[in-house]
Length: 381
Image (cartoon, rainbow, N blue to C red; front, side, top):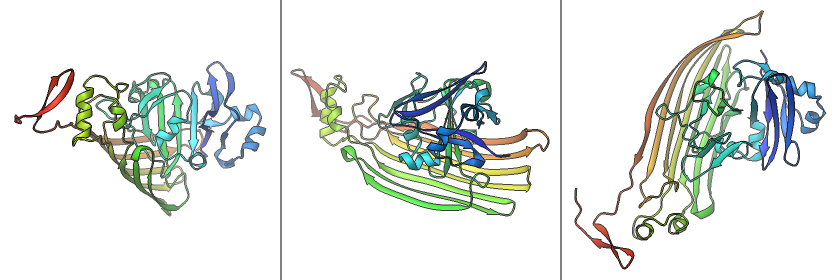
């Protein structure tokens, strides 16, 4: 069965939005200076922007999507707003990870405080805990809080496309999908040709920030067998916000203490380390049958950022870790456009934990003449 989708690109306030409401009223809203979009039936990809502009409205609305209903469905029948950002868009706009995509999509609340991404869909702000995050249709939210804890671990290396459903989807995905669904679809032996890639990056940026990362991806096919190996690892340092932390604009409370600690052996630190590894084996004994088994590992460790006023920002790291094992079988019926899938997923989670900030040893603060002044003291254990 050929897979079809709609691709919607949004970058620097340019967006093509396709919305369809129940009741057969369909319209296409154009936002930005010009229409930037790619999409058509899978067998016709890729289309140029000029070719897309020449498509009649009826053909645009007949393009099939799958995320909103868990089955191929014509766009004009889907009661949802859907964006699909493809690997062509990753290259065209320099997207490196999921954060870059969310930053450029309309309808997103987006704040990057230097730690876990803050924001959400459709006006609901938080740590994206009202959005269901999926990887190939399998849940990736933390079980303890339902937050996906988005940092840099969702690299686009080895990703074919990202589908975003705007609006409630709880009927299909559970109560966690109150604001929408994000589905990261990776390359595998069924949707991509044989390929291998190895990439790396070393760089720096604003306020002494540094970044080093590496990624590998490989798709291999041998008869009915398909194998995918994929990995990403990074390490770096976020922007140094020391000067801002010393200002009253950030926080007036404990400003003197905070300034003293920053200047005397407790510098602001926002190091991060992220990793993702995936291995999948697929077996297709018949054209309509496929069996998959795989494992996925996700880990993120990053500084606490500046969203919560602290006394010390030296050791405030937050760690989140997930391990997934899955097995699935799929059968496509020959006479009807229906496929049946049976899957099992085991998710092992290390709940998000912190390495708490440590106050300086041997100091206590007393207030003199309206200012906090440190003085030596004996540590109490």
